[in-house]
Length: 433
Image (cartoon, rainbow, N blue to C red; front, side, top):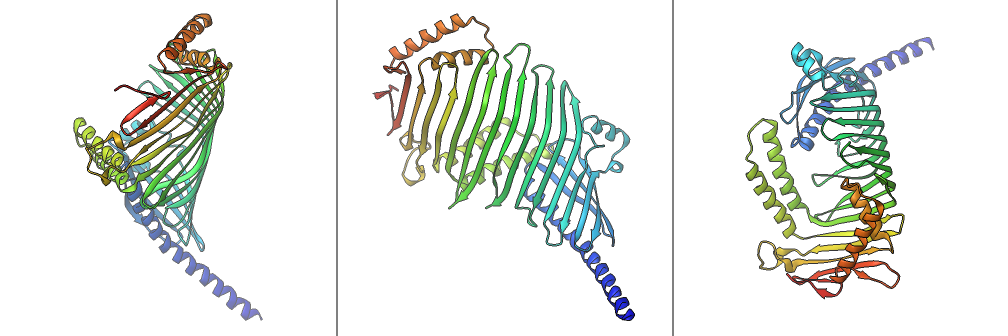
């Protein structure tokens, strides 16, 4: 019996050692693939390289370099601990890769002492990533940004093309010498990421408990309980983007509006045309990464050309809902724009006959005046309420007289616009070109 136990124990140890060795070999392959995948996904914005990989039995070490545009390169050190079922990776800044002067310069803008990412790889390539930072302060050139309580968790599959990310930042404060200051409280979100057809797609929600910003010579904004929901899909070669934004209240100077909502969708974007536009941006970004000079006029020309190609393929924009409650009533709007595929007929570069649009704007009784005061506050104007009210009423009377707005019997104001076959109508009457 004793011999059986010894043999079984020996086999178990051999098995664990073999599994650990396999984990060491597998981790090196997984790590190299992840660097290559990062280069493939984000190569238009960042440069990533695997400089060295020193594989050991229980511990391995890797060195990578990341560069964003013309900024100084960031060197990272990755320490792996191999286990029979996977590996733990601790990533920190590789201080030894810098000269003393370089390190001092970069550390003045980045909190290297707190920058640590912990990853866990499973043998099938799936990974879990954790990052936590108590406080971060970055400043320079009249700009200051501080983060409090940053925590991020992510889970990715072996191909790094599907995963979940959740994060929370207790507070963000920013200060700019010439444009005021601001703060964000309780910024958090959950995102499900997926790559499809070479496009980074996903869905999720981002939230902020409070956003406060402004300056001495402009109005101060306070936005409460903001939620930004999004979903992007790829169906039959067409990209679609859905967005739904809402908030509880928005204060601008002395004006307040509540229960705001903006819900819209952009659908039917030709994926090949979008990719061509992305590749144009990507090529220019790669030149910027290497420090090459780029002709601004050439950039604008290339982007304009690819944007026109995208529009010629057709797309649909739908404003499903816009609502804003003021003290005097609700402001709402709905609308849609449809661009027909211009490649189906012999047409000029952009033919307005391929455009169809409709929109409705509605002000409840008194809401136009409240909206006018809100815009005045956004512009930083400081006028008495009575004067703003007088101006708003005068403007509404003028717009009604010009058939831009229609006044209903209940005092509400409405505008209806339609565009079809190259001609527009406002409130049922043709719009002159």
